[in-house]
Image (cartoon, rainbow, N blue to C red; front, side):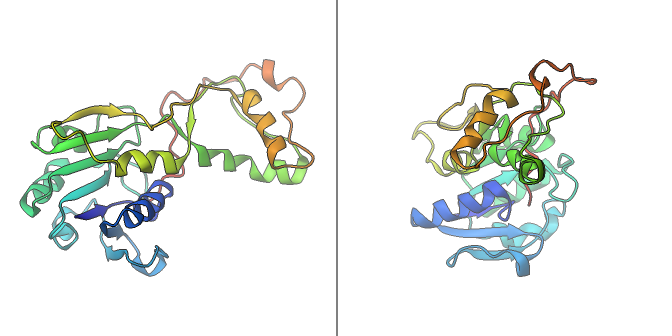
Length: 232
């Protein structure tokens, strides 16, 4: 089976390419700049952009399954050409599609996939684990975690777990599947709950500034899933 992975150089895409290759699949990896892809040996790297559907014919040729991201990797705006992409997929013989969501709203791509007759799975993680890397500078320089929303609770999921769901075969009788979560659903936690985990890899362990747990944010915390580090 040949699987097309879009967003292949992103944090989920890289894990997915590696997992599919390990499982013995042929992988075609789509990226805007193949010269910078640095993907594992065995991946067929092709250039292209999901915003340019007519230019994706080569990427879909001979593919039987595809992993799509529903946003533009350049500016994270939702793709508006979902019907064009799903038409290409069907014409190429694609039978199964997974879609990584970058927003809680249902995008034109997701709507087109659901109406396409293809077997589909939408992946809707709340927050990528790699977003914790935003703390790197303050932990390194001050030993302190600086967080704009210290009381905002979120369920963080490792990118490899998201990729594992995308790589898993669908149920034999399924023709469609609602939004699917990664295999181990984490309990929501706020930054103060997560900071003690830094003791596992930081010496001295990081800390929140005094009073941060009870500080009242001046603005409301984000209400959309944070998948900031998902890049194409």
